[in-house]
Length: 271
Image 1 (cartoon, rainbow, N blue to C red):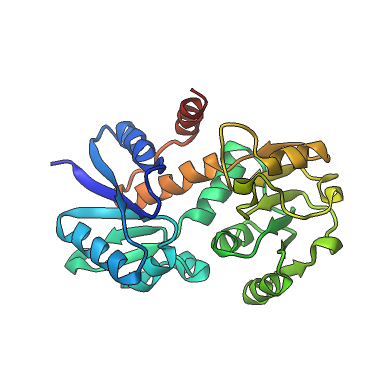
Image 2: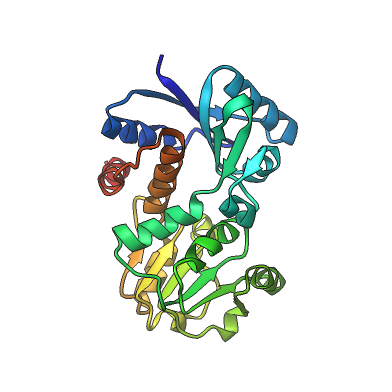
């Protein structure tokens, strides 16, 4: 019987995870069963769904919105990066039915920037826009690449200050932002067709403007960045594929190649 994996979320029908992991399995010469599971939004429903999945022979699970915090609370043990993120996006079944929680979002982002887009983060001034869970999940892996600085800016400044204190980085008001080498949009403003309220000048010296959202067309943030001087822009499709690759490696001890999968997913989106 094929090894079973899943992704828990709500909503979940849009998830590209089954397709991505099936492509990874093909690289390994394996066949896996990977399904989407829609769960009612409560800790009790989530916990019951996870326990049932593993009891029925599941080996690993991805976790997406809005369950990453619940997965953090459910895990019997946590990786260092999951502890720093305060959230879990990957569950791994251990012996004696123990469950380990990890977070591959940040390492996925870093891998996409450094290997697929070939931008080094070392000695770069990095700005992250937003101070929610998406930002918290990526700060530690970015910091491990020894950037010159990491600055967080958020509409509600107090949230940025909170993160800055926790991680020993900088917080800035939108109006006070200067220029940065790499600017990452970790807000969901693009879903409403908006861009974060940052001054246009911040993009003047920007080498890479990266939006964690992805779409068939350049996102509003990517368009705004390019119009105001960003040398290159990218959306978050690569991050999605790369975080999945790290999860696949945790489950199956196999490192998938990501560039061809990103290209395949991009082609499918544009079809």
